[in-house]
Amino acid sequence: MMSFMKRPALAGALLIAGCGSIEAPDDASETPQRAASVPGPAPSDSAAASASAEVGPQTDEKLERTAERLLSGWVGWDPTRTAFVVVTSFSQEGTGQGVIAAVVTEEVDYDGQDVLCDPGACDASSPALVTPTMSWLKKEKLESIVVFEPVVFGPGGAAVLPGGKLVWKKDHVDSVRGFKITSLPKLEVGKEFSATPAQAAQSPDGAFALVLFRMDPGENYKDGFNPHVEPRMYRTP
Image (cartoon, rainbow, N blue to C red; front, side, top):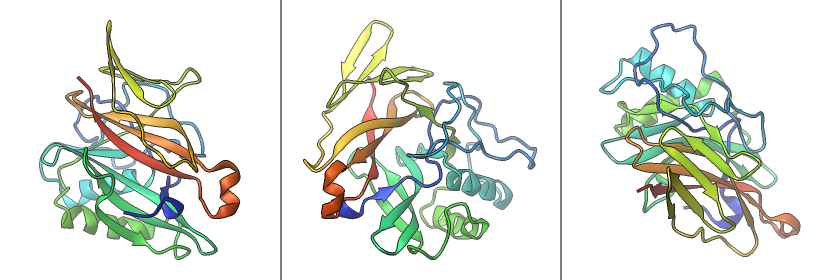
């Protein structure tokens, strides 16, 4: 895992979101929505954003579409590993940005981590990254993942998902399902940063959620602490 000063930041868009149909569209001309990065353009606020991948092994054509969507800011779900899949960029002081792929579980934020492009050697939106992303998906046996568009936390600190909503409460997130409110584990961060939830997604069965937190070093930036995004996976009872 990277140090606090070199944590990955979101690529042009990291994503998240709801679970509609999990059937991949056959229309290859459909391009993935440019989801929000932190900072970046805002994604759709629809909590019922459609998934884009089939359950089961994908053909290379469909795997290529999955890779393109991950690179454009969507998040994946792997039911076999009970994990989310993300592709983000990361900063390296004085060099630029690189692109990294990782699996996010309850225990490990960056499992199966692999650098797809070294800092300063590429752009996160480069078509040249599709092939290494596909290779990484195959290496990590992630060919069967489902990918989703993101849902953002609104001005009131809430992200509305198909199975309920997540509400930010200063140092933790509450999972709200009808009248049931469950406080999720407290977010532990370094004293050099302040945390703000940016985006969220949930697994198709609604049992797990992923939250991406914007980590702002404020004046500590001058001491070498970089703004970045921290992913956290939670059970949502």
